[in-house]
Image (cartoon, rainbow, N blue to C red):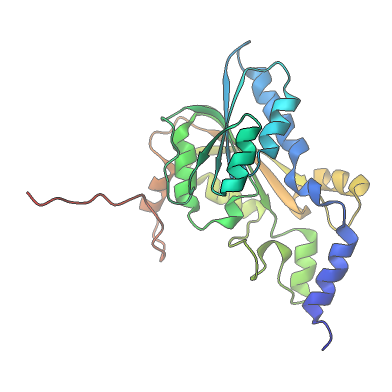
Length: 262
């Protein structure tokens, strides 16, 4: 039996983009924002960074190497034991937990920067996750989010052909799809975060020499999107967004307290 249209189209696409996938992680974009945040801190001040879904620590190592001399305290959150050990071996303080169910083990306003790169598309409980970010990030702190772009040029072409977009394939780890406007609407709901900047990363099916400038000029068509959010001084946590709207989904709101009969 021959390959289906979907398989043939995706096979051709992946042949064309071979070697460009590192651009999907946007480490150049992320590092430039981090460097700006570090430069704006008082001289010698400790800058605490938390990476949600830290993996083996690639983003945090990139930050450490790209900010020589900075007074950084690097923390990661990860659920895979082998990745936890690898990150700890790099000198990163890693907390092993489930970001969709567990509270981040930190006091309110602990961190100056929270990073979530290529992780929230894997999750359902984004209200809980962003509530925890809003809690542990100090007012004025930066939240940097990287996600695949459902509205990328190649995904628009795939949809036109009736083919499932690559960023939200059914037989995959991704459970959510995001566009630039859709994520902006979500993240800025009820004023807990401001959106300061959006950048693009990679541009299928072009080589890096073309993909980089294309993603800068046309971020809404790029393979991945990177957002710089700023925590406002609004009291409370992002989970309260669920109290101002009705969704026919029982989103997680934290562990229920057990009642004890007197």
